[in-house]
Image 1: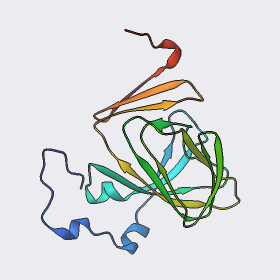
Image 2 (image 1 turned 45 degrees about the vertical axis):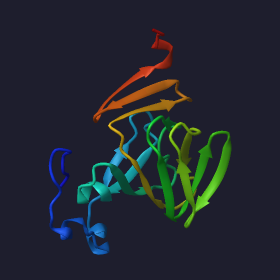
Image 3 (image 1 turned 135 degrees about the vertical axis):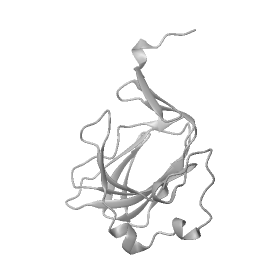
Image 4 (image 1 turned 60 degrees about the vertical axis):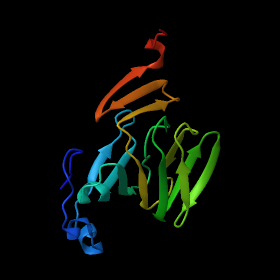
Amino acid sequence: MMTTPDQKPPKDTQSYVLTKSAIDSTTETKHIHQFNERAIRHTVSLSDIVGLTKFGLHLVRVEAGDETTTHHYHEESDEFIYMLSGELSLRYGDAHYQLSAGDFVGFPAHGAPHSMRNDSDSDATYLMGGNRPPIDITLYPDIKRKMYNIHGEKEYVDLEDLGEV
């Protein structure tokens, strides 16, 4: 039911209500990170289901041993996670944290790079959210790469190939 920016949202408020049973019966989408084959997230995109376009909110499950992403930060997008169950190891800048149910972490635009890994023997679940700017740049310092997301089209460049103007 996604609406495009030039469409008006439906007036029927029922379109925006997701019950627990509807969420539980929604098939997860398996996302493998484009730069890290060990980063596998099983996701239900709550915001997409109800047609939100300016803000993303996702219910994410990470299996034991998997990572969530490639260590990164966004230049335009704020992000956050709220842990629902299980445990995740968070690498945030130069610090390391152990996260469990009830923990919240904010990742501001231009903030420290971050990534998580499930080092436990069971799944971890969390809510992940953030704004959706029309143009964003993601920096991946460990692999020395930048990705440009311009109106949904993504391109990347290795930092060694960037030139100054």
